Length: 123
Image 1: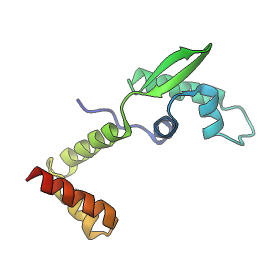
Image 2: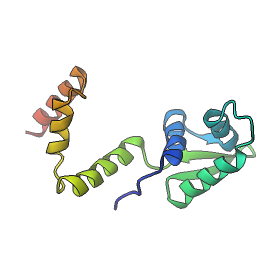
Image 3: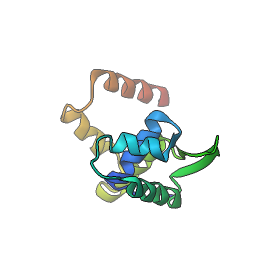
Image 4: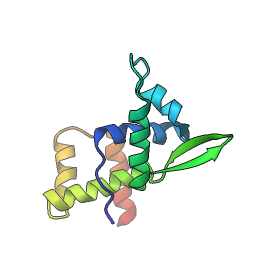
């Protein structure tokens, strides 16, 4: 089942949760809007609510404060979105995508070595 593509605002919250782990709404607020001249509390609450409704975030009550955690890993979300892109653009093949990354010099030598290792292990 394909996960929905997240808008940038929701993806920013997910990035925080993937990087930092469990966070309170206040911690998310402080990270997303550190010097905002007006309160963004409602915006953060809406983002977290939408992510929970989509099944991307779970909330736990710990020490009297709700803590929010990402449900899918960054890797699972990225893999799912790459597969959806391949299905839409290249008929399901990731070869043109990888080829473009290689030809466009978008992969580091370490990433290329990692791909080689993965391919050799699959043979």
